Image (cartoon, rainbow, N blue to C red; front, side, top):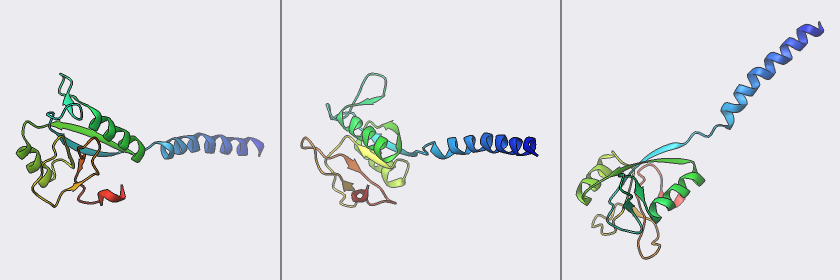
Length: 127
């Protein structure tokens, strides 16, 4: 009887460790970010089409705190960026400040420039 109970305890421990590891693993929400690299030092390319700058650092820190992961897409002009934002190909756009369309939500400015966020499923003020 002791051997039977010991085997059951060992089996439970083996399976509970896996379940515990899965429950502790963070599931990160992937957001696609479009950017223009013409707003140095806020957003610029570092030579490898990988974005750098204060806005990128800010967004990455926000993602760490709120459990988001970002995939970045470089755009050469604002029109293409806005088209993809409106079509849903990207969720967030950064790297520009002049917007005629008032349906977009902007964060409060820092260093005189806002970080642009468009969240169709979530109110940006709640994030």
